Length: 302
Image 1: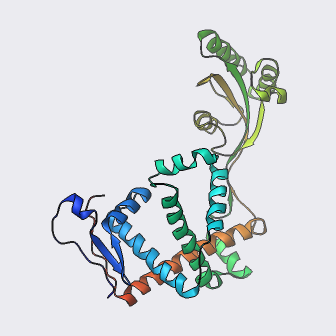
Image 2: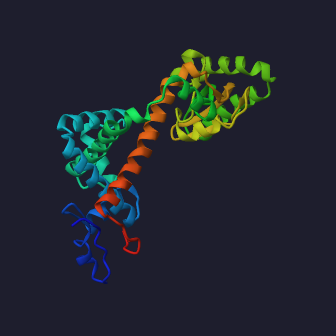
Image 3: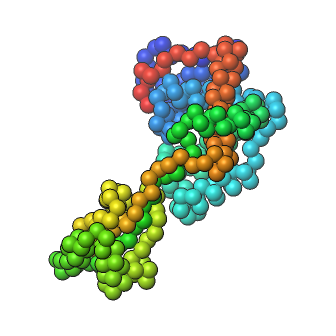
């Protein structure tokens, strides 16, 4: 029998931990599993049970089709993750535990499910989600927020090392010298001061950091830099080891990119979104076919 077993009696939390809240083709889903998923992905208990049921349905389809996730695929994804996030192998388990996973095996179990979900989605729906050039062009024109370049700013800076009064006064002096110049003369003043006095490696480039997007600088500097108009300088910005003076020379606002420049990116985004939509529809049909109906379990605390 297939279905969800709803808890209708009040029992102690210790007993609830092992209660079955769902069954999919004979596979029991327990409240403790749901609580683990709810904690890791910040879901309600009902959403977590749904997630587990979805994964069981996907697992059944994968078994039927002979689709698996090999250990080397998990290892490769973990290596990519460490590279993207700048995490060392020594610190990886500590990081995943801080995100709610019990250990590396627990993390791999969840990762295996997510990779399997992507494989099934791709196998079942990639062809259906594909667009020809004409369809893709219509999608591009109908979605002005797609294929847009991010805002970028051209940044220069001067760094004064130290957090004492002398360091602050020195930084304040540089700021005043730049601020008092006419806007058209400020860049040359920044470059002159940076080359002679800045205590950052960029002094060799006369203070130039270059064109950057949001998030490329440390948070406190990033926020100030992106709040400045062109040809404007910031007062000294305190960081743990000194003061930065930020100068924004120019700004490139967001703009719609030409279709040919980004059609591959749009296609990838569209296909991923469409496959996700089709997968959800398919899972819903499978639940109906299997007679699975979820009751509201939100009253059970995470």
